[in-house]
Image (cartoon, rainbow, N blue to C red; front, side, top):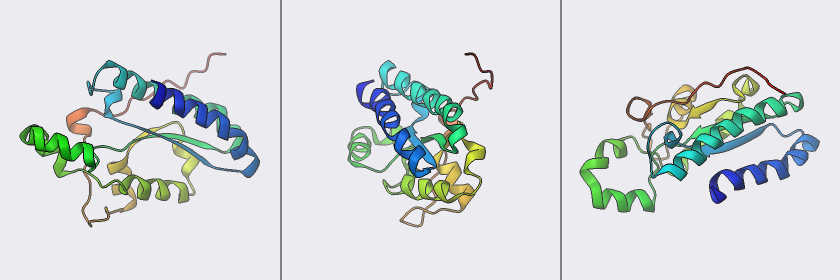
Length: 165
């Protein structure tokens, strides 16, 4: 909770005045399917679900300033941790690893989102990086196309548009 949700909140809160002054346009939180399925334990799931909801609520607050707030599920990422898990539990994770993305892939997706002239139309959404990448025609640095884990792990929830003050 300290690293994931609380740090994201404090950083976003601290930078928002600067973004308003400089006409910044995107605050993006990294989250995961752990918001919707059991993954790594209760605290992990709670902070990922909280991150998605925080991005949604921030979108409401930041709309008057034309600042988009999004939560992005990066999916399975090829990194040292994934490599170690693969070595220990290869068969269990083999299917997920087939569609895994490089560490750079999320950056390519974020860059495409940032450049999109219709960015504000998706403010408040939780998106899956592989699906956004497919929409923009982004290939990973190894020329592969990461796959969405929506079918296996679930998709983002849609929050109510109701506003209560």
